[in-house]
Image 1: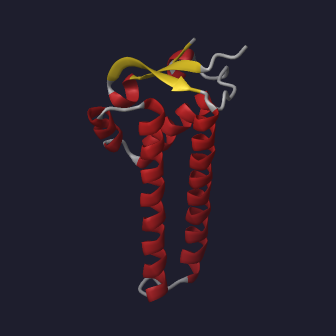
Image 2 (image 1 turned 90 degrees about the horizontal axis):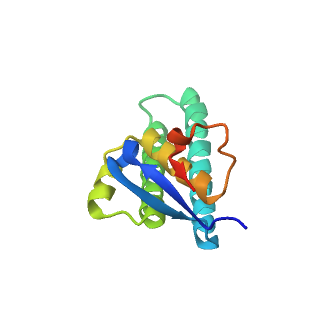
Length: 135
């Protein structure tokens, strides 16, 4: 029988010594898949942006529309990651503020760490202290 709850450390990311409960419920699995889809969409948009920029004049309206669209996508994925982390870990306002202070890449790594626990990904290659798993 699989454990439905895992303990996770977020000391490095949030500066909190307590271990967080990470539920592997189907509800959290759905949240995780939705986040993974949003991140994948963001990565696709990023690649399309890079390809399209090569073809556009840097001062054209199309160029600026592309930049605006990409900024919208960036903010959207950040909001979705924040909602996901706050929901799954049940963060306090202070802990949420700590998450907001992270870079986009740090937020992606942290949400991926949580996702791996929820989805029961193979974490054996990582060191226990790197993933902060207990139980």
